[in-house]
Image (cartoon, rainbow, N blue to C red; front, top):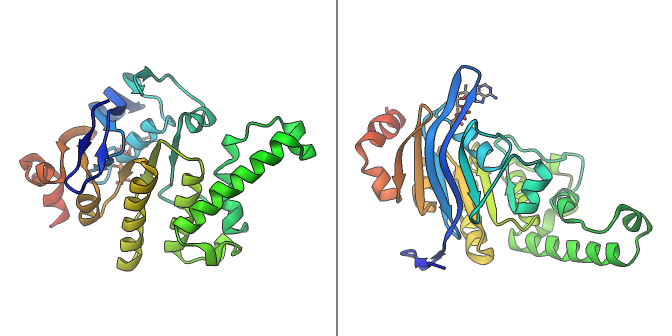
Length: 268
Ligand SMILES: Nc1ncnc2c1ncn2[C@@H]1O[C@H](COP(=O)(O)OP(=O)(O)OP(=O)(O)O)[C@@H](O)[C@H]1O
């Protein structure tokens, strides 16, 4: 295994996911054009670009939700074919959504527990009868969920129905639910969208802490350039479905094509 230390002392390992020559079309629209990049173990990888650049499409390809017409995806060196959502979860990929997708009427605790559903191994009859393995699993699930609740500092709202929470906390609960699945790769779709400055700072801290404490690899899409540059180890820049930049935040910041295509637009 190759391992590198980042300037702030975090460990970045081998390539975890390798995407080669990915092309994705919707009818006549080519959302992704022949893009290759990889995600290394332990890193925080951002995908940025102007509106319509193809970022969400790319996140959906990574998560297995979209199957590209061309190209190859390897996860831990193994070629990944089309998969069902539960197979993706079993592989260790979890995500949050741009528009929060929680159960408003359910408590914070119950919402986070749903993140563990894919991990239940006991057969349904033993779950129904509450015996042996099912009971052990339930205890394990609760322990893991409690750990995450402590970690994300949401103990005081554990019984609150999610619908009553302010936006920033809902986003934190969504992060908690994704973490409950103990993912190898966590995909975050605009984790800071709609947040005020304080909520953004909290979210940034939690993302860094998750990466640090659990060693979770993180891929994210985010419009807030300050956040992206602060958080990420490497950044892929997309424009009109093409990749126009890929590198450290500094490399990307100084890439002329990126400046004209994206940063230029953002500062107009
Ligand atoms: N399900 C779909 N059906 C048809 N076209 C789509 C679909 N999803 C995305 N597209 C098109 O693919 C292109 C890329 O869209 P995508 O949503 O991936 O971009 P984006 O960079 O995430 O944009 P934004 O920042 O506005 O969310 C756009 O032209 C979009 O209209």
